[in-house]
Length: 279
Ligand code: AMP
Image (cartoon, rainbow, N blue to C red; front, side):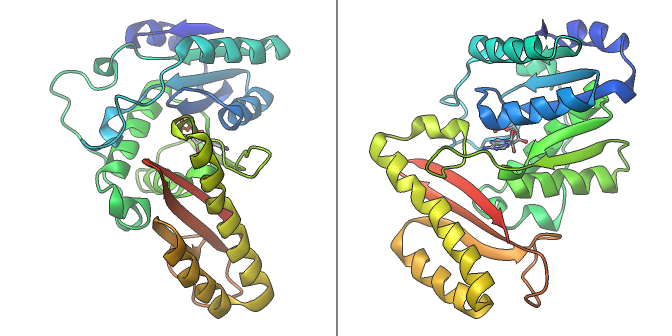
């Protein structure tokens, strides 16, 4: 595993590689089994895997947890090295910019703003969030120039936003989305789970349990019954949203034969958690 901390250091490594052998896993670090599943997949299908570790200030608004966000580069590199040891013929390059100036040089003044799909769900309570995500992912795609990039379905809306950007801007990159990794109790793994007290961690299970119940209700009793259940659940906790949408374009379902997804964002203590299930 090779660790690079500046754009110039990374670019020297990148110049030695061909695009068709590169898989890319963008992350904000504090790696857990969810991230590792993306890295494993990239290792399996690519000669070279590039992992970025960058806590992107542009996707946090002023009142959010940018300063508190866990930064654990040493531990992250240890986990990546272990993975590399079990795939000894594969190359891993970590790009962990030591400062945000490596990504956004002085006077950087461009924003990638994807349309409609960024205005719903998480975009309602975090209005600048997806512009920040699209801008950093675009910037990283330009720097890394991968063949394939790997994302988690945990951030379903984010995956849709990036897919739309890649499609609209005709970026020559394949995208893959991989299943959500959970703990034994069903809680989706997230770097933000670190902020949960023991009691919060128990309360957080309400999120995946409710999403599962709504999903089961759609299958057994249909959409009207599922909406009734949602209305009941919305009154029981502090939800940001709990919705049933079409998988394809995240618009409301027209009929029950469509491929649907149940998505929720729940406030637990001072932490906001998201989760979803494909129906
Ligand atoms: P993050 O470091 O939170 O920006 O996440 C980096 C990538 O890991 C994103 O594509 C996430 O969707 C993915 N990811 C985060 N948590 C999980 C999880 N529990 N299971 C699968 N993928 C995940």
